[in-house]
Image (cartoon, rainbow, N blue to C red; front, side, top):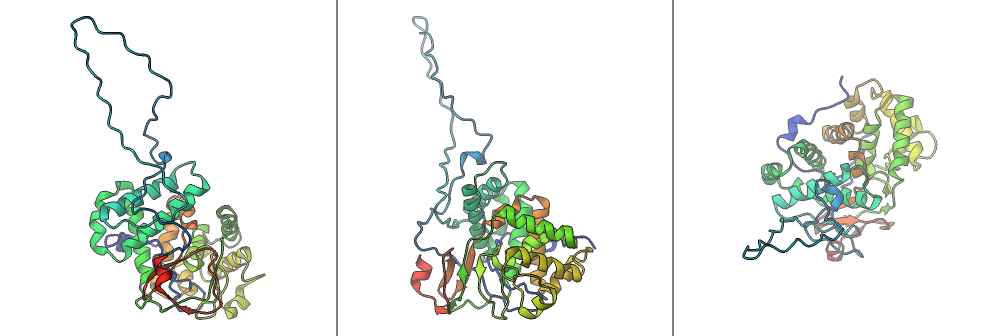
Length: 353
């Protein structure tokens, strides 16, 4: 069986995703989805709904000549002087990379945010700050589309042709992950949110898993993304799963080696488990289903993995995705530094930021 589980079936009806409704549940045994969703960050200023890209996103734009232009000679007597018309310029101020991006409230605005983010992520020389910001912008734009299927056609029409399938796959994955989250939570989780290991370090662990067990590194990255946002979430799922790859203790006892909370050990153990269920010999759908036996999980992880296979720079965008949590009062973004030892009721302040 091909490594790819095509998302074409649902791409036609989707244009939304970004792990908008993230489960944090991908343990080999069935785990109750934990609803990693939301949108709020206190202590940081909000961005305006549509953020213009840095100049690097538009390599075709020419910079003004820094040297002074010598004055032209005076025209002959009696000849009218023609003022040269100034070329029209599209001014796009640099994005404020330290603010929390906010999704646009129109289809055209969301399409522009997706274009800006995707092109910046795929540019050859983005800074770490640009990757972090544009990965987050990409996420909130896809997330905003998750509940707006009526905007699909308009957003697709406004996107460059080469980004339409990219957006469709991310949208489809987000809608798959939304399925188990019909009822918003009344309390925030007992989690601690930490910085993930650097993208290069995690990729080395994924590639080690592929080299040893034959499981494509892109799928290990997609599992890590879907489970805990690349290890940002520290805490137990409702089924007792733990660690960056969300193993329950009984499965870890059979397939785990080392420290369940260590990224390297957890990723290698996940590769071992997936390989034992066909992931190392091409049967990735079965391996993912054994990891979390629901079709929406298989479809979503596969969609993200295929995006990384198509363009490995997509991984850098996903690495910047944050932890969201859906509540009855609205979506809450749980920033790095969030910590709660017990579940507590969500308040308007959590949502307002």
